Every structure is written in C-alpha cells, then in structure tokens.
Image (cartoon, rainbow, N blue to C red):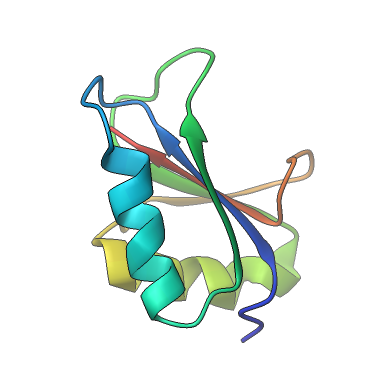
Length: 87
C-alpha cells in the first residue's frame, strides 16, 4: 500500500464540510496527499471510490474500509490515483 498517492475526496452529499471530515480520516490513517473538494457532474446514486489502474486497488480498498464504502470502480481516466465520491 502506498499512502503517498493522490486522493481526492469529493462531496456530492449537499451537506457542507463532508469532504473535509472524510479527508481528515484518511490523513489520520497516514495518507499524505489528500484533497477535499466539491463533486461536479452527474451524481452517482451511492458513495463510490474510483481508482486509476489495478495498482491502486489495494489503496482504494483501504480507503473504503476507513470510510465505510464498499462500491469500488476501476477507471482509466482520473485526476488523482483515487477519487472518493461521498453521497
């Protein structure tokens, strides 16, 4: 596992401060490159973790454990190695 990967935590919940709260959980676990932000685009129906490439699957699974998200999806295009969308 590589806790220096880039992780974006995106708030799609409509509640202020959710991304920052969840990002803090990752930082407390040792992730060093975590950015909270607001989600833009078509809203997913549930919280989801997107990860770029199979090499980031273990990182995505750990993040899912920390945040209680089981919905993971590998994608080829992503700004960060892992992006978390909080619904």
